[in-house]
Image 1 (tube, rainbow, N blue to C red):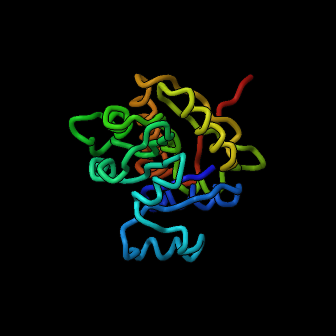
Image 2 (cartoon, rainbow, N blue to C red):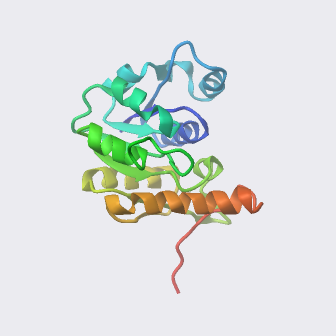
Length: 204
């Protein structure tokens, strides 16, 4: 797939590295000149993968949004025509909502004609870089109305190395998925369990 990543912090950078390893074409939509953080990522994946947001979007069929929620409206203004494209929202609005919307997913669903899905938001970037614990693959989770976007997100989750990408439900479960992310944040950071923890569905 041709994937444009908007937001090259820890989450976007981790997914870029994993998807490149899996054989996908990845472009990073970023401001020019590159920030120090982007330069660090460029040393790992190549500076030629960095371009402007509009150019990255125009060349790709799948977009990953991994920016702070507050800047989503500026991002949307730069996306251009995204009709028929898949947008994966990997953000969390548990601390700051993109008013008047509850989540970035809801803003994207309302203001674009893309196929939108929430995914890759429920764990730390360390688990995106290595989703295997003691030879067992971790699980990923997604939510949203678009079957097309969910199919793409599930395939990309498996390409990262996750065992299964579970469907949390439709749009009404997007906020629940963000609360699930907050549960990881609570355990890992607030309760001091450390970032090397993760979720996996097990059956008796």
